[in-house]
Length: 458
Image 1 (cartoon, rainbow, N blue to C red):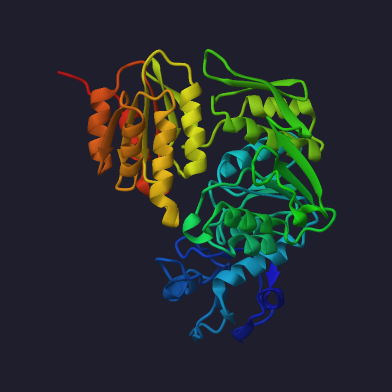
Image 2: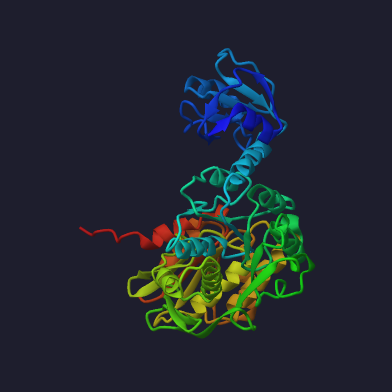
């Protein structure tokens, strides 16, 4: 519930029209979904501007408008609040709402594994608490505030994935969310177009702790070369470590892949078996285990949660493909997650060929060609039999793979349709196929192609 006074105070705006005694229960930025009695914030996005839909939302019964363009509404029962920036106003209201609740806010970030780790942490905490989390990848300056606005008195903990592709994104999300626990997965070559270097990525990600005090807790991957450094800004906080190789508070033992391609390992003497053979999911599980223990979830409940964990669609899902396997890692790609995916395919037990169908990695700036070549070399040095690339940038990956491994079959394709034609020729029952690429490359179309039921013959 918000009053006009609270909305004006939170946004530092000005009521320019309408009554000032209105109370509203919810906030909306989508003109298609808005209902009577809500606040509509006219956010301007890359494609649509909420100000263009003012008449539509007023007709639906919206009682409060938040705008950054002066306007007059004929309906005098509608309160209009003018602010400098409606997107910022959304964050300010979310922060105001978040601060009403004295509950733990767990925020996590990193170059890869964020969504899976967020889902694992939420899965573990749900064994004891009523958890709110951001759905899917609503991890930006819009998604995080909208998630925080869903906090109800019944919620006991919030788990937030926080993403960035430019300087300033994470500091803003930290200001809005004011997390009490921050989790770092890894730091690497992601969004280099604007963050420039891995050190630039580290600086941006570390800003997630900028509003934390000495009571704050940081959960950190000590195997990550950059995160393992002594970071001055973290000295004032409690740091909990996890890892496989280096000494850590939470560390795994006996990591191995079963004949059914399940990932097995032990944490604190407890055996965990995941429906995955991606080694990166050991780290994701360690982060979730650490958060569970921080929140006093029993080790037995944590193990049960992880053993039954279902991986998010398009993020390392392993499914049967005839008598072989399909690794659906199609949602997104950068050099960090690409190396993890190659390791997954390499470690998978299969009697057939290992095939990678991959597409361009985007937003890598001036290092784009070099990083594609680097991944081509990584693939060539792995137990991979066939590489099919999609897109102009991935041609550099294909060329380097050919140069480094003359025995590998390599096909460089301009589009997904061409890749599907080559895939149809090279694939056989019993093969293991990995599909991966940046979000805008729409590699889920290759997944749909592979899972398409065979056509009946007459």
